[in-house]
Image (cartoon, rainbow over all chains, first blue to last red; front, side, top):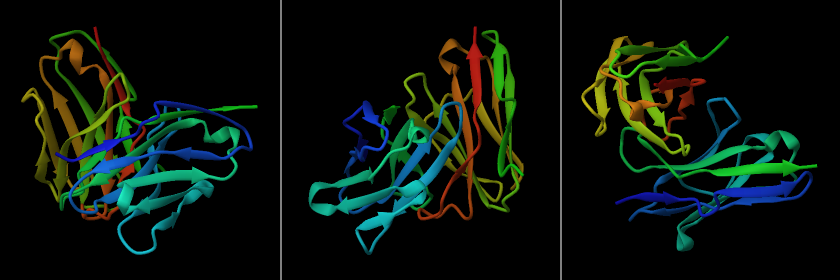
Length: 113
Length: 114
């Protein structure tokens, strides 16, 4: 069965520091990969997605993610976090033809002054 | 101009009641989805409609019934509500439902069953 693992439930980072969120997937082929962000009390917003091609993907809000086939990973990074980046981050995959998103458990990011 | 809207935002009700959540998108998309987010923030798809036709129907109790009167609307009706139905329900839409299409999410409806 396919699955998405986000090993870190909670990460605390200082404002201005770099951030890396881990995501691993379990699937025979390369799935379609997504990162979504959920701000408190809000819906989800797409940060970036990867289907094929260049394995380093740029997204909105200064985020990027790197696909590594050998590690079945799609980690999200930001060089310098802002207080507004405090949110829940979800990695997700699509493995079917109908766009059924399968989400990881999420990583909560807390930004300290 | 809200792209995907849901009503109500909050819904508090008693066990055994029947309730509906409405979703509308003004993006001109063909595909709409319902997701459930539980108390641990785990998100799981429930249903998807493409041009008013049901295309994804995950293992959910048959007390949950989606209805799509037109492709801009996807409502969720829940019969005989149970405590375990308490969750945040998100509606989403995408252009055509292809795996590469971005899904746009509504703000969510927080359902509390007492």
